[in-house]
Length: 216
Image (cartoon, rainbow, N blue to C red; front, top):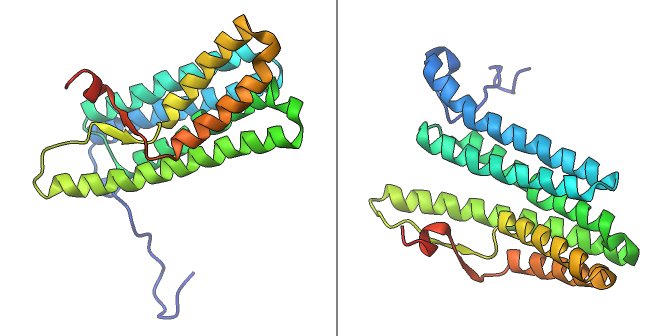
């Protein structure tokens, strides 16, 4: 296919050198964190299927597995110096599925379906706010990267709003506690909690990172 100048279209926006000029070691290094990310996606998809089948405990374990793999891919990227624009985009898409869609479907299948259309709207709100939270984080991360390139050394230690990973973990922990100790009130409590978590994700509430908590 050609454009109006008669020259072939070319792919633009690549962040890496052509594979022919990239060493095998570099290609392997780039592959490792992305492999962790894709494995996390499998965990998220598995959680959705398990929750649909009523295996809520296993669905929670699958989401926890996605959390572990999400931490592992970031750690591997830093250790191997394999951070890339493609990896960042892939990680963001994985987070949307694993910590937005998967928890929302778990909560809907277990509790929110009891409220009919309103319950589905609550689940949808959780998913949408997760997407907005991740989009805002990506914009801020790019701005921070440019800030550091200008010679600044201070890295931010606070998040703007509740991170999607923390929100998913909080919902799993709360769900487990409420179902265990207050099963009769579980549905309305989790409906309110889901809306609260959604609001916190898109809020401007300052949330400390691990670096801020442990003073690193």
